[in-house]
Amino acid sequence: MKSAAERFAGHRQALAAKVHAAGVKHGKTLEAIATVPRHAFMDAGLHAQAYEDSALPIGHQQTISKPSVVARMIEILHKPKHQLGKVLEIGTGCGYQAAVLSLLAQEVYSIERIRPLHDMAREKLRPFRIKNLRLIYGDGILGLPQAAPFDAIILAAAGLGIPDALLDQLAIGGRLVAPVAKNEKEQQLVMVERMSSHRYQRTVLDEVFFVPLQSGVV
Ligand code: SAH
Image (cartoon, rainbow, N blue to C red; front, side):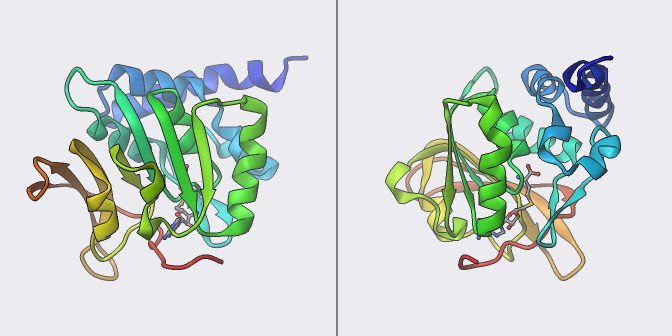
């Protein structure tokens, strides 16, 4: 009988192909999608759907993000010919995107505000023994001043705007990518590049759909 790892190897490649077909071109990001076993971050009952390009429930009214959107956002964080240095993720969820980021960045910090999800991500990530990833239980709207500045910041939940603390904690030359709500139904992916201490350049990209960014911890 094939082990689960073998059984899913072809699925991972197929998922990377779907993400490529959805428009993601960045080679290293596609490689990372082809490497991380997405099923390992989900309940056994959803394993059969783990390699579809869709968002799926992870409990606590949250979702594991859609792989092509995860990859698109990570692609956007990369400046041409740059490797990612220190990255901050807001919204660990089950830890899938954090695992993908850990393959591309020097250091990853990931914050989650729902304690059981933070604990679950820790559990799911343990077997991978990822050395350059730190999980933090807290309110990501406040960022992580003790580890700032960050070369890249990625939000996995949509707010009405981009929290000021996160803009402050972005390194000069760094990029932030976030879903931002226009109204109750529509959200846009926004990329912000910090040009100098006071100048930020904002670019509006695709329409997306994410769970809401909420304040405080539970
Ligand atoms: N990164 C995940 C996506 C999880 S969904 C993945 O790999 O698929 C988004 C997550 O953001 C949820 O778990 C939600 O609880 C969390 N979240 C929302 N607002 C937050 C905040 N202010 N600080 C930290 N996490 C937050």
